[in-house]
Image (cartoon, helix red, strand yellow):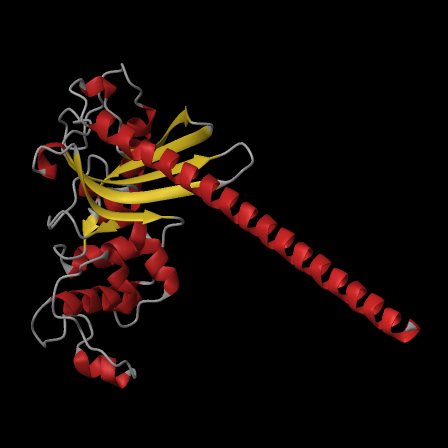
Length: 292
């Protein structure tokens, strides 16, 4: 009888331990799910706050009063929204080199302005031209067509079509991470313009367009010094600088909570009449998180 009671007691103890273990596991799982839910809510709130920056940018770029429009020269525009500090930077795509429309010489000059060695810059510019053009002829000064890709053990050749995104540059034969990262801020696929406009172009693009370094720096400084309410600076061509309006822009909006949690939304949008269908803006590219 005593043995039976001892066995029953041992069984009860094991059952209690099992139940206690299940309670601990359940509590731990509930805790993890609660933390995950809080993190997801915080990230979603940050994303929405960052997206508010895009909405504000679209409104300010389409302002009827030129002195109230945001300057698309990459300057930081900041405001608070729903407990987040939001920073928005806007750049005019017309000030970038279109890799589908610019000739190889201009692309090479941009790489030279970015510190790429000349022979390498000319070869890569030719490879970019060969990637987008429909023929099988190597670009003057060096390039890359299908046999060159095959010789490099790549299972693809030159696309022979326009670039769909800037990130396609990474597939061009000879392109490495360093040169790609240097190029990305200054190139686009959205303007179809053989040469960028100087109005909101950055220093390397201005130098690629033939401006002397001192003149290019002077123009960037004069443009950066403009503040709302001041007379608009004169463009390098001598005319009054048009502050934004309809056009295509890249927008980077970053929302940061007091605890440091940050979410960034990067986008390329068409603003105003260029958007079509009466929309304030039309998104062409959109990414949540850190840019490429």
